[in-house]
Length: 405
Ligand code: NAP
Ligand code: MG
Image (cartoon, rainbow, N blue to C red; front, side, top):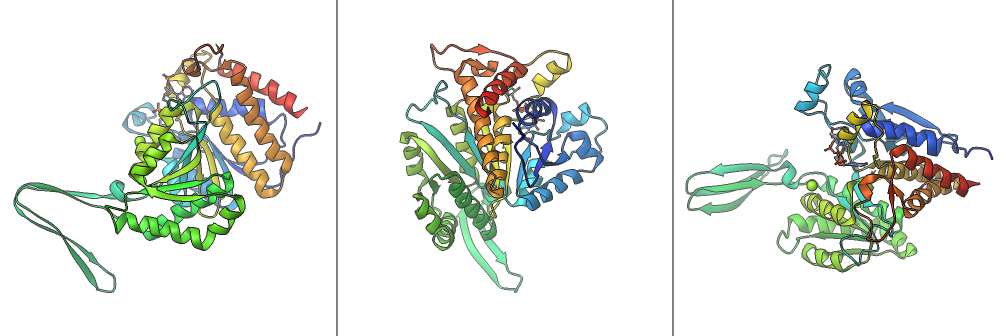
């Protein structure tokens, strides 16, 4: 059997530590034997980012814009401790994910990989709940002020035209704390578009919730922009696919999510998404089983695992130990990117291959072969054996080969 052909390359962003080791193994065992892989390769490993003064990250992001699909390995975001660990670093380079997200103007969608032997804490959740978190503004770009006497605060906006708008905030009778937040119409609109795009791509309903009963202007603007985008651009496609766009107050959404069967995308403002994504991820099981897709308003997609570079395992691996690091989220990043490339280029075989990679991975888990992190999560009575990463990937490769034969 000949290898599956690709027409357009996808952007491959290599990364750091244990995930870089898994990256090479996944390619060697699960992809290269079956696919005539075409990628534009960018090495986002910390030392290469340092050598290029982080230009490689910027180049990779622009390449993603150009080619429409990328797959990214987890990368180190240097902090003070890393500066000591890598003395050759000339700067505390910024988070690559932050840089890429800013260039692609994208929204990150985080989805759990679910399977019958690992039941979510919420018993009625049958399908994944994907969280879309708006990643700009609100509390994360707020300014805070402390005052220590009675007085009055006002909020003033000065337009470039010279026009001013001033609002009384509050008069207080003693010490107080203050905060001013903002968001930009353009950012909210890009967020809305990415959400509708991704819902169409995934063929899943989209939920959006804010607290617009209290923040009538602020959250009301989010609600209005989502409605405008839906009505003007996405409604027809949603109706054709039988999908629903559903807006509800966040309190109501929380109650409905808990009672739901899952299987939808839940879009949230920055803070709500920060909190809810951790709750949903924990309730579904493990960070090692969580994928993440960055989606631009124009449908450009970058796939990655949600977890980091698994440093502790890497230092054991360097000493020659075999580790049982879970490659599932990284495999799903690759399969997601290959499927998307296949969809965009009309390559049915490539789409099928991506699906087969996922099916073979889940089958391996359901056959009771898994990495050790999952052993504590499986249902009581389910027979499972913990193996190292290599043996796990070999078991997946064997099933994948059978599927493709
Ligand atoms: P982490 O790499 O996600 O690992 C934290 C712990 O979670 C691990 O020590 C391990 O626990 C467990 N774990 C995570 N993924 C696993 C997997 N695939 N298989 C098995 N166990 C897994 O987070 P971190 O230690 O906070 O961060 C390490 C580095 O990753 C940092 O330099 C950070 O900047 C970077 N990071 C990158 C990204 C990204 O590129 N998207 C995201 C987050 C963090 P045990 O050790 O108990 O087995
Ligand atoms: Mg959080």
